[in-house]
Length: 241
Image (cartoon, rainbow, N blue to C red; front, side, top):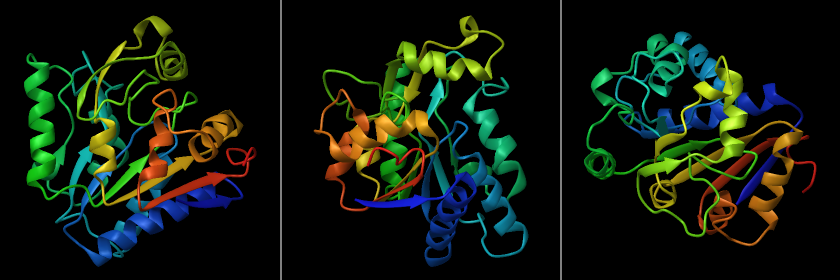
């Protein structure tokens, strides 16, 4: 596990974008695992800039998103499908057939999850997985639990996660309480993992991830077992290390 402590959000997002861009240049047909939320926004903005000046191309890239709210249509402006298109896909040359995001309106959840895992495997696996981290140590929507969920599955969201995400909705009552998420095993099968953390509110989660015991009570702690993880944290998020 490599930890890069940077001065601020701007430096964090640029370093993350440079790592992803390097992956894309070295392997133009890379499979990228992508995250949502407020933390990766700057990274996507920088990737769009690098695309527009001709440094990178998404034309051969395949993407798999970590998660999606269950019960929101892809056109809902709070869905992660909408987020990805608004903040990245609409601005680059990615082939829409190569974009994979869980279907939050699927009728058969077990089949949707199994199909998602199958598609990842058939793509050759994820070359680089981008992650954020929740205040409670969740990655994807893998919440603190008594056990690690291995594969893509339906999650009951933790109250802390619902509260944290309520800032994106008109009220906390509108926040979905369930989501489809890649499992811990899905994430660990990625060849390289880049985790971003910004702000003092993430300091405890980063400390527990890096220094604490490996436990499903802190899902991100499992990353200690992965052979190629880079954590990029600003000074506030890394303040307890």
